[in-house]
Length: 112
Image 1: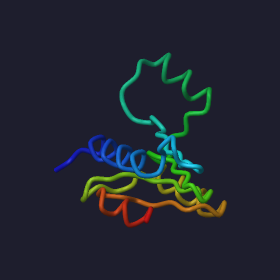
Image 2 (image 1 turned 30 degrees about the horizontal axis):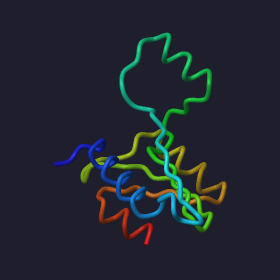
Image 3 (image 1 turned 90 degrees about the vertical axis):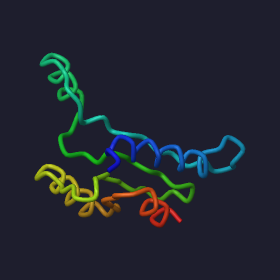
């Protein structure tokens, strides 16, 4: 089974190689939100004080047509935390799309 990190790398590479090339008139954007990992207490406090939001999606994708999508990556049996469910609800209530993606093929279908 692939880790979420490996899936994120696959998705990032595929999207950048298909929608973000420098020769494109309108290039897409994709960036990650590094909420996971281990940090010392001071670094964690600084990140939280400067806007780190527990539960924020793993990726934010802006398509060349201007569409904004929030993407949470999960392993096949993975489930959202309560904070991730709250973030999803807030995003949807603000009128944006939020998707849980478990494979590169699912992501390709979403984007295409």
